[in-house]
Image (cartoon, rainbow, N blue to C red; front, side, top):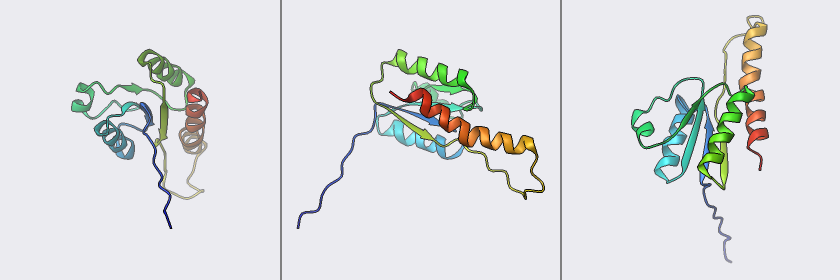
Length: 126
């Protein structure tokens, strides 16, 4: 019995949210090592000076803001990338009970975790 093989190609460029700290930063580094261009999106400035020196762009901005995504799309158009991937690793996790949650805390989490992901998909759809 022959086992089917699953193969795939990485996209030309991958947009990664939450790209400055944590998981998003590590994913950008791994993608760059695999020869994939990345565009990191985060409120914080890019942490990795060597990565910036290799021409890995980052876009400082709020994932829940349409202006951020307009700039990301403009950068992608300028780069000429044909196959674009998306990793939405930006996330907010506030630890506490519902009794401690304020509307501001809830809004921030919803904006990053849900609105930011939805806008990324909306703006990057072909």
